[in-house]
Image (cartoon, rainbow, N blue to C red):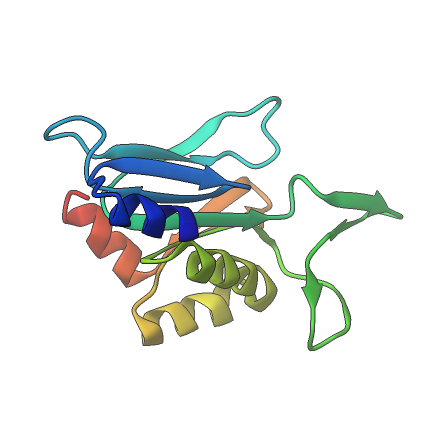
Length: 158
């Protein structure tokens, strides 16, 4: 966000900034073409695109359990702590992606969505009109869930 603010002050109107996985875009990649950002497929060998988004003037952050975790006695424990329980989260959220005006807000909310889980996270996103996309570990693999604001953003073209 600070880098984006500096670029704005310098008069740049088209840019993409990525720091530590959080992304902020402004304007267009090329005239008439939105920035293309990918949501990574959790657990894919190497890195594979799960979903491609076309965005302008927005920040995106994804939090998940597929990079920093341990498996112990049949359980998967991610690096995210549930402050209500004082230990690792126990949700089936593999990946939470949030689109917001600032990268800081998107990052914080992506982590919160992982803590809250599918039902609570989507309900809060619906109440607050946040654009949220969740991937859940289901018996059949990955199930996707999106908030109405996320769906409206996609239906609107960008």
